[in-house]
Length: 264
Image 1 (spheres, rainbow, N blue to C red):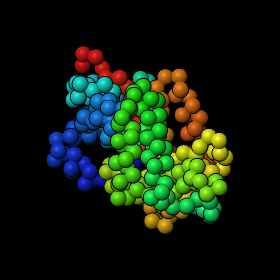
Image 2 (cartoon, one colour):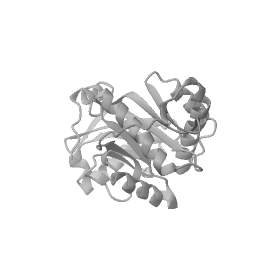
Image 3 (cartoon, rainbow, N blue to C red):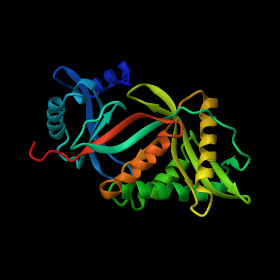
């Protein structure tokens, strides 16, 4: 499935000086500072599929990206779900879309209240910290700061799973998310976590049911993501992704990354 790029996105990128071409085909590139890891990235948020599918063009694109952001520590490409750039590119972040039916939400899953906010901050900070470590970076104090900022977002909605009246897990959504590349509005499933001493599988399914019902009520797709660790832990993320794809999720789009070319 080839993504349909928004003409407004390309016009905006051109006006901002971020649109370039290679072999007459467009790509959009800029410098990006990852909020969780603090890593400086050269981010190609859109690349024409004709460039991604041509190994020779992709090599020359990597050279062009290296000159665009010479201080970048990593080069990142957005890729449609049916394409893979191959080595040296490795999966960085995979976005998945829920296509199952929103089932009934059990009574032990409730909309989060103010009294749940301390637990939510702790869970979200732990998620940011893990995401940073999986990319080889220490998020440090940024984790708690990002969690607090997220909790204050006007479109943030959270649900908690309870056991004996105590919150033991959550799912947190951003309900006014927009994919600038395609112009599509969606509900983002930003994080879900269940305490390890609980029924993790069952309660996670219940929380996803709440998220799916919320997105369905909004008339929007529900989109989540999987972070791909660097190094030996990468296979674990692939196993998680494979499990999700068996449970009603489909690939939406992916980000691949590679080290920047030296001396380009």
